Image (cartoon, rainbow, N blue to C red):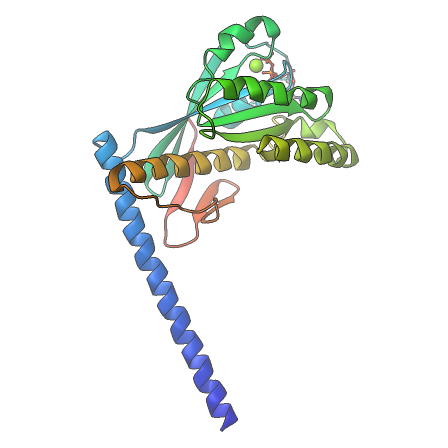
Length: 260
Ligand SMILES: Nc1nc2c(ncn2[C@@H]2O[C@H](COP(=O)(O)OP(=O)(O)OP(=O)(O)O)[C@@H](O)[C@H]2O)c(=O)[nH]1
Ligand SMILES: [Mg+2]
């Protein structure tokens, strides 16, 4: 009797799980359809979405090298200071929707600050960069962020704090510096990452995360505009990043990176 009862309970649980899965699938399909419609209505065609990313930080911390590793997959040991600003456009495809990141590389040298700050406006993402092997550069990140935020609407940008040159420090030094960096990141309401442009460690994963959050934000804005209500993918939970591709938890949708 008890065995039969347990057996029936198992069947019931399996049926519930199947029902929940099919419900999630339906919601997901409905959401995707709305999203594509919203994109089409706003641009006249699916795609052409672009988000502005601005990278700031002291001179020599490795901003240009990080962008070059991601966009061109190369690394130059020689230092060539950025003069004013420069930018790269990186193409992605997220759940079948073409999506671009416009990544602005600004000069860290004081004499170019005036030119560079003119490009801070409209940044959906602000990346504040410091050198893990030069702790003083971490102290300056708050000032860089403050300057970038001044040019943008309050709460309109995602903020990242990135420690570069991970290959130059031992694991012990890295861990110690990261304790300070994570404290800074919390105060700055930023997400912390450590990377190496030289070895490529964490570089694709980091930019995939940037793209996922910027895409999510831009889609929410589209849906708000067209549907008049707010739909949220989640705090990045539905988008899982794995090395070269980001997989969406439900369905076959995938985010893939296409280098320019
Ligand atoms: N070992 C190592 N060196 C790096 C790394 N990233 C950058 N560098 C070196 O650090 C120096 C400065 O790098 P840049 O990328 O030019 O620095 P930047 O922040 O763009 O400097 P500005 O344009 O003056 O603001 C260069 O000599 C790079 O080769 C890294 O991850 N590891
Ligand atoms: Mg540079």
